[in-house]
Image (cartoon, rainbow, N blue to C red; front, side, top):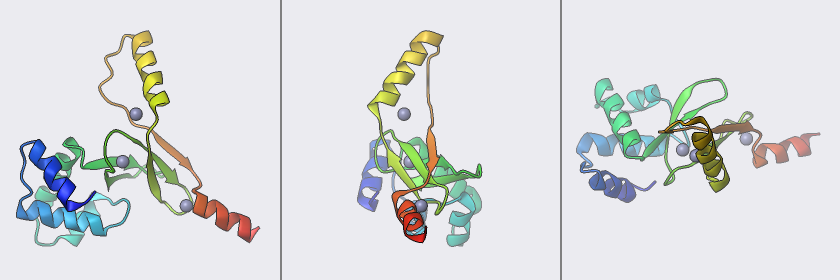
Amino acid sequence: METEDIERTLASGGFRLTGPRRTLVEVMQGLGDHFVADEVVEASPKVGRATVFRTLRLLQDVGIVCQVVLDDGTAAYRLASGGHHHHLVCSECGAVSDFASGDIEGLLDDIARRTGYRVDAHRLEVYGVCPACRAREIIAS
Ligand SMILES: [Zn+2]
Ligand SMILES: [Zn+2]
Ligand SMILES: [Zn+2]
């Protein structure tokens, strides 16, 4: 997500891209496709730890940052690509990519109807080997 889009998304939630928030967003953009909170803390020595965590929470609430559970159980963060989506996580190189599926959402509506649950949220991570790593494996074998 570009800084402009981040600023617009924050504004639509009634929030401003303050100096510290801008610093943290720029740090996150430089950290690659996912990062843990401590990496953000380390990379932004001028911003206090509590501010980093508060900002991550805020960015998550407005949909700028999403959480992804890596295959070792680590909870990482990632700048979201847009609306509701799920993650594909490569067990070889650790790359994370996004996908969306209307079928999955429909299935969950169905489960909500059958169980009587009011479903508030869900998360789905799919673990496997990404196309780049598969290509490397084929060449190596
Ligand atoms: Zn995501
Ligand atoms: Zn991979
Ligand atoms: Zn979904």
